[in-house]
Image 1 (cartoon, rainbow, N blue to C red):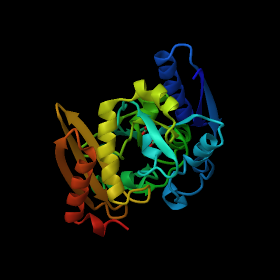
Image 2 (cartoon, rainbow, N blue to C red):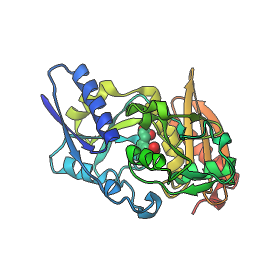
Image 3 (cartoon, rainbow, N blue to C red):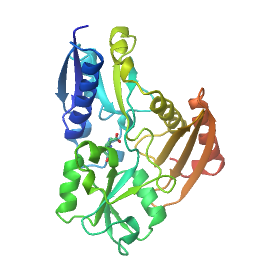
Length: 302
Ligand SMILES: NCc1[nH]cc(CCC(=O)O)c1CC(=O)O
């Protein structure tokens, strides 16, 4: 193969991530011609409704998958966080790149940390997981919906619509906006969404030539951690409609997984934790999912 076309969303973050994949590909295969094929998705178009309400899995994937099926693209680059826990149709993941900062960022023009917000402050986020975690720590806050790409969200904060907003550190840093992070909301206090901070490459299932091109970009530790996180989330019926958090780390030859199920309205949370061998990340995900259910998570799930 001398030429490869990468489907991408048109947001600044998506373009950065796809340019990053393109650069890594050119580095791994000198002489390979890499072309970007930008497009918009339904998730980018419908901005007046919370994602949890638009529903439909893979809101950010469909148009990119159609482009692959119609032969207009050979691969699609996604934030793995936005990829459904189970890929639908004839697709597979060819690579999961090394994860950037997996945590959420507290961003504010007036306050240096979540704990410094005054009683009843207005915080913007439309992620049910972030709402549940914010409620759990600060039941007094007024949580307001906030949609749109990273720059749109920052513009709404700057316009004074919110006292603070919460979004992914990885997205801010990739866009050169790391200086806007006032506090990193780290685990175990704040657990991220499955695969937050990881970029993945999707291809047509069985396309071995394309899969081989991406093999050098795959990062084993990130792949193992995100497999455990995604298995746990999938077993709990996870989508954007439920506040589910999952975060795995590797130390030596063990993988550890922290899981959480919450309720965005009440701020109630159930937590679970386990560790296991590197060879069975899905089994670890299943163990933590079972633990969460045994501790009452099903009462919080729809
Ligand atoms: N849901 C949108 C989305 N998908 C991935 C990221 C950030 C980058 C990443 O997690 O890899 C974001 C923005 C955000 O959550 O603030």
